[in-house]
Image (cartoon, rainbow, N blue to C red; front, side, top):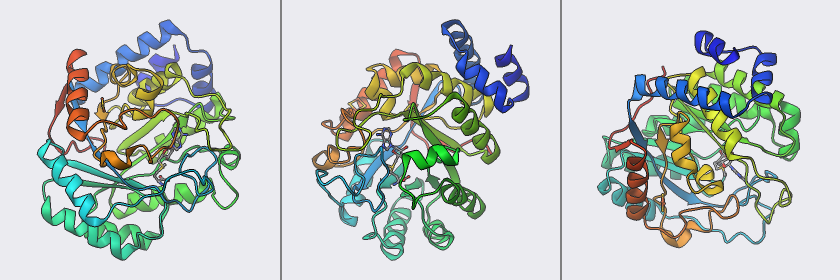
Length: 344
Ligand code: SAM
Ligand code: FES
């Protein structure tokens, strides 16, 4: 059975990955999730790590066809948080027990290297015991290095899809799969803990594309892998496309846990958006991280990547409590620690 082979060898050929994904069924999924949970418990027990997400700008110079904050969306209500506002999100988060801050935003030229270095240094000196994660898209090696030297330790950059033709159907011509992948190798070389990932069920995606994603991730061997269903946004060219499914996303979480047992795997907000129990089911399929929002409630709904995003009205403390209860209900515990990846 391919799942047993995956457990033994920690990878499969492209044809085998494709067959496993295309041939999945309920029984196979249940078996996969059981094996995935065993791996997860072996290394991370029943602990769930939390990351405080600060969505600090929704300005973006890119025009990705799927994304609600793409530059051509004239209906997006644009905002930027000031350094002061970002620091007060960190302060509130620190008191709630967060030891990782994730600064995420569109590719916004207003935030020059200089401004970001200043911001990162300020967070680093105030919170020496916290991890600083950046998720701000493609930048030069020199910029990544400057942020690292200022105190950033992790970087999230989903490769989106490893297949160049598929990539070209999701992005305008100035964005290329190879360039994005090069950024990931640069980040690794500099010494960041790196996260990559992709959307599940994005338009035109095939089982073979997913097989290529898994092979790319195996080769990159990242510390963290963020996957979530594609969800259409009404003001994008993909407004009428179908969303990715809960079922396939969970199956891929299980495969990723078996492929790289020590990786950090978030149950994402998008997963919680397509199903009210999505994040819990993600944890039960092998995930071990949740990323509640620390952004000020006033701007939450403006960081709208897709329709019906959850948790846009709740204060950070409410989200923290809600997730704690949700995790407890399925036998897991949210822990206050940096939660570094065991995958070296
Ligand atoms: N600008 C940074 C970057 O490019 O990595 C970070 C922000 S970007 C909006 C974060 C992620 O959101 C993307 O990597 C993409 O996978 C995801 N995303 C964007 N639009 C989405 C949609 N409609 N459904 C699900 N995920 C989406
Ligand atoms: Fe935000 Fe539940 S996680 S309200």
